[in-house]
Amino acid sequence: MARRTELEGRLLAILNPRLNRRSVSWKRLAASSLGVFALAFPLAALQPARELKTDVVLKNTDAILKNTDVILSEAKDRFRAKAVELPRGKAIPRRSAPQDDSPGRDDAPGPVPPAVPLQSMPSTPALTITPSAPTGVQLDRLRQAPGKTPPDVETLIAVARAAKKLTSDYEKGELLVTLAKYYVRDDELRTAYLDAVASMTSDYERTRTLAPLLLKDSLPMKAVAQVVKIASMMSSDNDKASLIVRIVREHPTLTQSIRAALIATATTMRSDYDRGRSIAAIARRGGLSNVEVIDLINAVKPMIDGYAKANALVLIASQEALHDADVRRAYLSAAETISSASDYRRAIVRVLE
Image 1: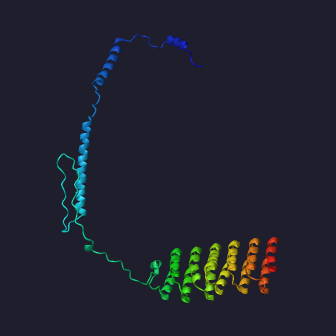
Image 2 (image 1 turned 90 degrees about the horizontal axis):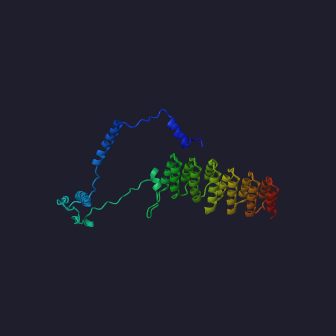
Image 3 (image 1 turned 90 degrees about the vertical axis):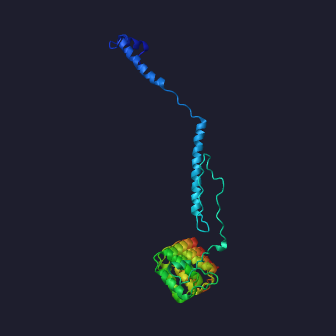
């Protein structure tokens, strides 16, 4: 809307004194004509490029293919001459590339070297391993092969002592797990094995190396003290509980010393959940003496969660009779520490049943 109209623009152009209104001179006309001719003559001299004929392209392609086939043929001959030798040790003669204009394609098969019978080929000597005492890295390859006697006790003791010197808990665990396959009940071997387990810092490695020993051995009281000491050094209650549950479920016979070690290990747990599942596993296995039942009840007493404490006491009462006065007294003393009235009633009513 703000622009000028066409009429207004024309009027302003007519009235503009700065515009040149003179006609074109002959000099300017001649200069313009020369410029046009100067551009027209070079452009007229240009011609369109001729198209390549199809037969020329095909001829060049055939020449390229011929050279490629010659190169491939020479390469094949050189490969056969180097890779295959005649029985006398001479190389197979190389075929020359064709010299005519036809493509040098290798249609005919080359000479085939004579087959060497299998009987004449030198046999590779079998790998023989000289048996030696398994120490260090060799122990992880220790396997009881058919027809071979297992390592003697002195060798196992030496290996257990060598395992203690390893700095890596993983390598130490692999060593002890392999040694546990040949474990026999021997006081010196048991002590060396437990010392190696105690030297670990990883709870996982302690658990997986201690379990095979406990599954194969009925511990004397001295070994029980070592096991309890190892368990007390473990910071993971979950690993402790897993160890107890596995031993209780898989060990064929739980001796009094092993049960005492398991109960003592359960008392070192801070987690009510892990302590409760450990106590439940021991109670379900049964066969406890009155002293062991009292120790198991005393392991329940420090638990904080009233519901978990009542469940543990009820499970013990369902598995073991509370006829003994000392057992009943320990049971009632533990039940009195339950803060919840419903859980306390749940535990106390088991005495009447």
